[in-house]
Length: 154
Ligand SMILES: [Zn+2]
Ligand SMILES: [Zn+2]
Ligand SMILES: [Zn+2]
Image (cartoon, rainbow, N blue to C red; front, top):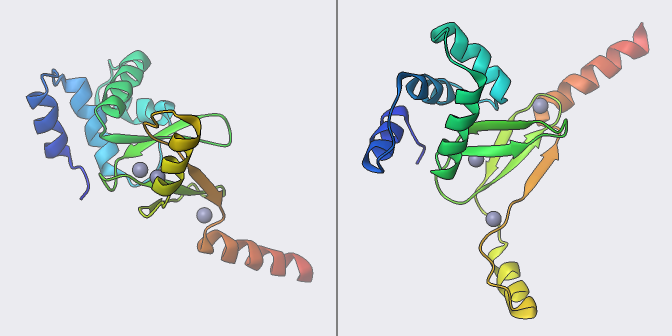
C-alpha cells in the first residue's frame, strides 16, 4: 500500500491538521514523483505552481508530513536531506543508487531479532532503527561499463 494524495488529505484532516493551499501543493508534488527531492527542488517546483510559497513553508510542511508518517526522509551522501512519499506504508529501508538517485525499498529488514538481543543486553527499551544502504543500480553499472568501453577505443 502506498499513500496517495487523497488518503493523505483525508488522514491529515481527521487528525486535525489544516489543509492550506500550500500544503496541498506540496503533497501533490510529492505524490507526482517517484524520485527523491530535496526541499529546494520541492520549493522550485512549488514556486511554479504557487508563486508566493516560501521555503519555510516547505520545511514546515515536510516536517509535519514526516512526523505524521506520510513521507520518508533520507540522508544523502552530499549531506543533504531528501524526501519521497512513503512507499510502502509499512516498515522498510532504502537502497539508494549513488549515481542516479534511484531508490529501492527493502521491506524485509530482519533486524527485529537484533533489536531484541540488544534490548536484553543493554536493558534499553528499543523504539526503532534506521538503516540506509547505498550502491550502484544495474542501469548505472551498465552505463559505466559502456562508457568505459568507449574510452578504450578513443
Ligand atoms: Zn521509504
Ligand atoms: Zn543508478
Ligand atoms: Zn528495519
